[in-house]
Amino acid sequence: MANRFIKITRGDITESTADAIVNAANNRLWMGAGVAGAIKQRGGQKIEDEAVAQGPIQVGEAVITTAGTLPSKYVIHAAVMGQDLRTDENKIWMATYNSLQRAEELNLVSIDFPALGTGVGGFPLNEAAGIMIEAARKFLGDSNSLKIVGLVLFDDNAYNAFKTALGADNLEV
Image (tube, rainbow, N blue to C red; front, side, top):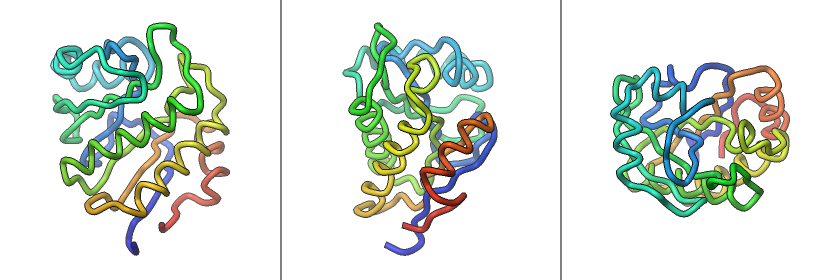
């Protein structure tokens, strides 16, 4: 299990060079504002078209699309909320875990997440951080291909919440 890491960085997930990035999605997979809007704006309409063609999906599930003109190869759309725009601990856990599962199915080595459920979903940052980090730790323990689970946080509040939950900027699992 050596050489598997959870890492936290402050930055723009659309600039990530990980094999895949995660989109904090709704279950219809429409890409509106926030992280989804930034991914669509930088990567192109094709990403949303590919996603919507696979929806709707159950909240907590995840689907894969190409990444358009983004540096990553794939976008994994994690349905962290439904049309009610609400989320909870279980939905965040499942969306995180199922995103990791999709990456494993593609034999990817690295994946970068935003803070799921904390924008439109309104879930507290510190709680989301703990849930996502725990899901990543659990998944990496049994992973065959994934070696790096990154959390790319756009602002200082999110970065600090995740850094506190992890206990450092990087953690070998």
